[in-house]
Amino acid sequence: MNFAILGALEVRYPAGRIQITAPKQKSVLATLLLDADKEVPVDRLVDCVWDGRPPAAAQTTLQSYVYRLRQLLGPMPEVSLQTSTSSYAIEIGACEFDLRYFQSRVAEAHESIREGEKEQAAAAFRKALAAWRGNALVGVPGEILRQEARLLENQRIAAYEELVNLELELGNHRRVIPELHKIVSEYPFHEVFTAQLVLALYRSGRQAEALQSHSLMRRRLRDKLGIEPGIELQQLQKAILERVPAMEITLISWTH
Image (cartoon, rainbow, N blue to C red; front, side, top):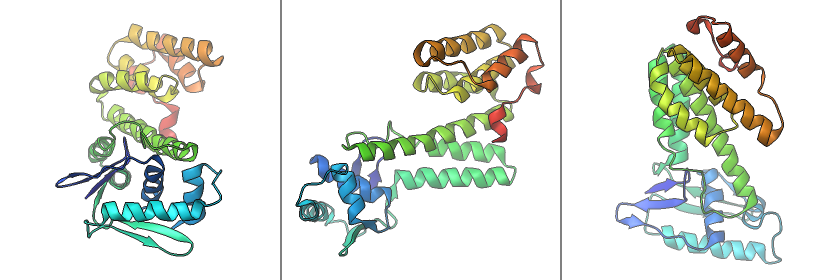
């Protein structure tokens, strides 16, 4: 059995895929999976499914959704839906789960960093990020769950930041430029990624492109948000204009 939420919500098994079409049933399963193998209070489930505006019969309706999920997952002995008077839990045991895989690989990367094994750490971050198939919880309704998806996205962004920092520390600035262009296009207002791209370009001897990338971000921030770039991008631009040797430049965020 394979559960996936880092993209569209999916439940797969060797013979195919379990189809969950009812929107609120998706919300129930997504909420349980966010805390897989742990008890989830009924109140939290009700809030996530009905965005804090539950109907009078919410708990009874919730029971019916859980009953239907239990039927759908029933043939899979490695998965169980546990219930009590105040909580529900989905126990997935050794089943594959993309969120758990992602977080385990990130933890592995951090351990490698502590041991000074930067190449191994970069490889672990890449494995972690490969678990993502798109935005988290695609197709799952509810503002509360959209907020949960944004929190997961923040974990993804942090992993990208750390991966690129490692690649730059390892001297792989040329290799990460195409990847950074893609990341910047996906996160156009995220200044750290632009700073990383600017530095990678400068270290690759592409000063004009580095300054152009800085100018594009500055224009984007001013036109769309009415703000100037932060101190990191400002200092990076100043260093490039003053022709500071590329390998002497580091990013403030590296020390955070």
